[in-house]
Length: 193
Image (cartoon, rainbow, N blue to C red):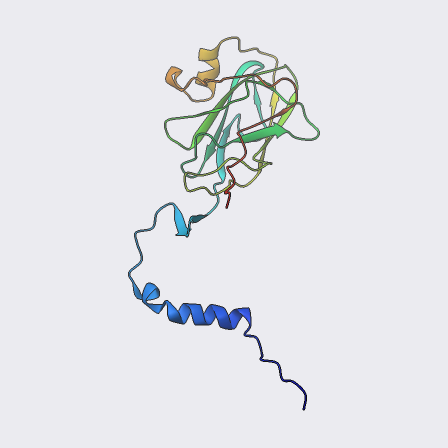
């Protein structure tokens, strides 16, 4: 007589059994939604990904060369230490301080740069990706393109005015990009078991 093996339950059957065993947890009223759903220390961010809604300079617009404050506005509150921008193919990259500032509206980042006259520029916004909402959702990548004219802007106050900002919104940076054409926040922390 041949030995009979005991059939092993599939993962789906085990998951169903675990669900049935913990049915009391499923019947409880859900807690007020926070920034995501937490399952044993793992946070799954909820809601849609942030989108760029406006930039200065506007898409494909012409801006004066010299001192410029680049502004990127998202459709939801963003995390202050999560950002990424870099050079896009086929266009110049402005000379920028490396760290953008999240403004009081919590949706707009300002970045202090200088640009040359009569030049086409393009920046990859969130190619890495690191721009993230307060809820931890990564922003959709976006390419910011603009050109420059001949009339030069020489001071920060004028650059802020052109970007629709006030002196209190002046970008505060810590260090300068050393010509690599990429600047980003530190990578997100990884969970260790």
